[in-house]
Image 1: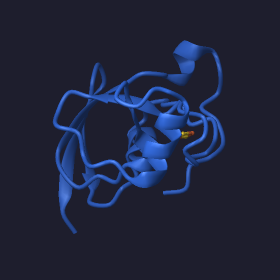
Image 2 (image 1 turned 60 degrees about the vertical axis):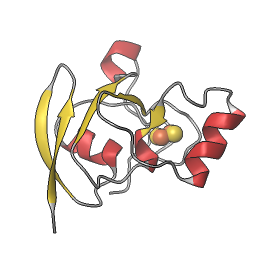
Image 3 (image 1 turned 90 degrees about the vertical axis):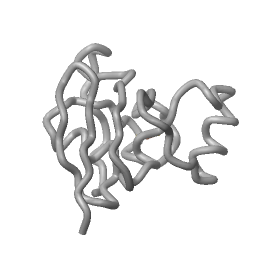
Length: 107
Ligand code: FES
């Protein structure tokens, strides 16, 4: 299985196996990314901005962002599987928001 380098802005670069759920991989790396709904494309707190080219967007992510009127503003890391090197900025870090990360993420 391929490994990819994922850079988390202001944190560091880690290796993630191909297919890793991006939000899960970021959390496993030790960064307290928010995921209030547990990775179900409902809360949008797992939002990230891409410094590198964005991966394709799936229908579930698209529909959630469109419904909230934020399509094009950020991506949902719980709906993205790592399939290339990535460089992202986490936009809602739990410790900055004053809440716990949220419902546990499935891998
Ligand atoms: S939308 Fe809730 S964790 Fe991603």
